[in-house]
Length: 600
Image (tube, rainbow, N blue to C red):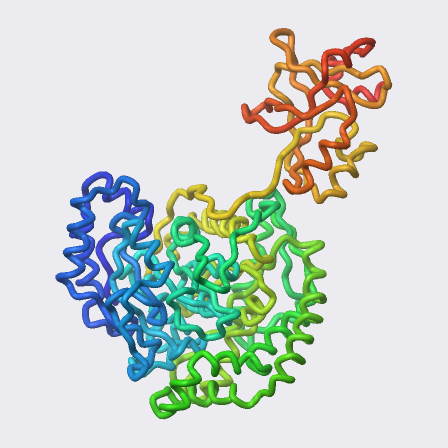
């Protein structure tokens, strides 16, 4: 396969630009050479070499300052608009030339990224396999006899082959995750509405999401931070909400896995073994694995194609397919025209069933942070797929189809290889707006696999240092407690009833003294200029919306100020008014409230 001679992960590329060993113009030349005659059928339209060189030169003349994606090459799934370039959605007769780029594409261009072209897809984003295209079946980057995954087939393969640093896809039923799993990539499927779908040819408009393919979770996060932004012109856009507890950085995240008797691998013992190894790796990371009943999620997944949502696919291209049905790829035509059959009453019945299933599914979030799932149960050869195009395509959506129906976020990450060298991937799934914790968990997962970099296979993905770019708000407030609010103490329920979680047990900096107040029920923590000591504290985090009521319940002489911790960080914490120390007992020598109470 063709590849550039340079690593295209964002960290490596940006470092090469900084040290002068590479320029955007040189990068463009290498990308043009790497794509060559495109034997994998990843591309539908490539920007001509003269225009690419002009874009690179313009960026060099302007300079990198203020452009976080300066000189970074990327690809665009050909159902997403790029100004002046045909959008085909995988159907030549449908093609049009947009005057403006899609909202999300324009944000990337404004950040200095270089669009290389438009990529191949399952026509009208209908499929999870990458073979349903008149431009040719897009081939797997590791073994061209196998499917690439779809519908965002070319977007994934273009990154896996080293043609670009990242790409945009779309994901309605798994199209931003299945191709990532089959090509050893990260595939971020953000919360619905966080990335604008303005300028995107819809598949199921109420369920569509723009997705990001990248070599690393850190790359995906950097791109997400740029691409994310509220688009008032997108009827399905919504502002990001605080994500809450950051389980991706928790010492012991709780990961839900399907019960052993519910796991489906369709006879693929290689994928089954890879998932067992992934479970073991999660345990090694410190995660707690919690078995969950997956049947309601399977039922939800079946709704997507067995229910009336296929009518939304029909509605998306209704005028075109009714006027030119023969212009549509045969299997795509069969599926889409099936959407003309359900009645409006069927749609309401399905919505009722979905709401009931959503309530059953929501139960799991009381005792897990996110799910750990196989991205797909197996992978098929292209000839096998073409022999049974609908049944074999359905195989790939077992663990993906339910996600958008339930308004969840997800990220697919590499997790090993079958013995024949084909990649296996896992997916982390969490409720909406928890994109940031998912990215952090994916970063942690990949970072832990760096020691296995030599076995990553033909794509040779580079290990990089992870950054901490945030695209969505945190929404949690950390507070240090030192007395009756400690875990196991009488007032701790004032925290836990508000959804607070214990972050760490630590001490203050050695600049405090601790006093037992006259009522004997509470301590007073006082920062002093000299003769201070380190005092035991716990740091809890609780939702910002709950913080006000918590503070309002704190009686005088206590209040909330700032507490300096042993590691030098400062968080909200209890303080005591000087007048409250009248008649108080200095208990600093005990080192903390628990030790004092044990001796009292």
